[in-house]
Amino acid sequence: MDEVTSTASYDYWSFDYDYDNYTRSPGIIVAPCSQEDIYSFAQRYTPAVYSLVFLLAVVGNVLVLCVIRRYRNSQSGGACAFSLTDTFLLHLAISDLLLAFTLPLFAVQWAHQWVFGLAVCKISGALFCLNRYSGILFLACISFDRYLAIVHAVSSGWKRNTFHAQIACALIWVVCLGLSGVDIAFKQVVDGNTVGHHKALICQVWFTDNSTQWQVGLRLISVILGFGLPLLIMLYCYIRIFRSLCNATRRQKRKSLRLIISLVSVFVICWAPYNCFQLTDSLQKLGVVTGGCQFGRVVDIGTLITESLGLSHCALNPLLYGFVGVKFRRELARMCKGLLGQKGRLGMEGWRERRPRRTAASFSSAESENTSYSVMA
Image (cartoon, rainbow, N blue to C red; front, side, top):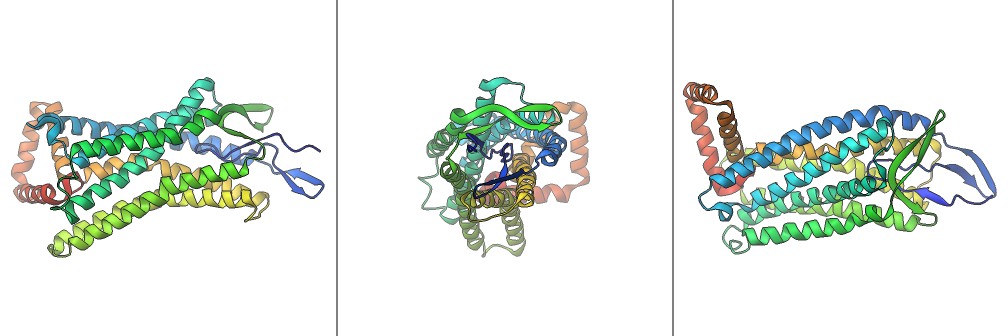
């Protein structure tokens, strides 16, 4: 019997369905592995999770963009007064926002089927890939900028300017655009798993047969650029930052340690499980790891769940890299106070009168932020 002519590659928003997934032995073709329970789980789980991540990411990142714009307009120096961290935070918010806008399309796909056509399939797939890579690399840039600002505060002054930050951002966008070219070239709308008598259309990457090494190679690039390299940069920079702050007061050290641990831990918790399942599936494709239908089922469902966990990072970034900053919270409070009008202003003033010590503490933290942490204090 002839081999299957095409295979579906694992995609960031659809697990690795091999629609003719037969368990083969030499000269024998055994019954195919059933995928109906996995597809049924995806139909219930994915639309709800993607919709929730979309709502949280849009609200959080729109607030970040509004606060950054307000802060930039309030500075007498204009663009020159814009810090490097704020520049990277701006691009990170744009990247997370664009990524979030692709999620409703794939929520509709799993709830029903892909109904948006081939052009939207390719464009949305490229946007998804582009912004997933760029968002993680911008996180690495933020950590490296904080490393230069704190560990090499004197010697790195000439390097830390807005022009260099814009060049770095432009390079990241160009590199990630090149990586997203795979989706533009190979994204197709194909017949999905048969559920009852209904064949759903699915937008996903579709490779020709005998392309296992090509698929695994692309996946390894994804793991390295989308997790391994940024994680190493973040670990190195934040460890050096903490060591340089050893002479600070005990309270400052505790605050710095909590912030560093939270940044690295959330990144690892969100993306490490997904990349582990990616590597496991790659090893299975290469024949290094063998397993039957149950093993494939665990990998498919595990990848589906851990992928949504990784996507939730675009909703957590505003909390970690924006709302933790005293300066950011102060600008957000001023913006909300202006929107609420006179009643809101009177309420805020009354709150400040009742909490004088809190205000003093915030002022002290703001001073520390301006000297050490910028928007991440």
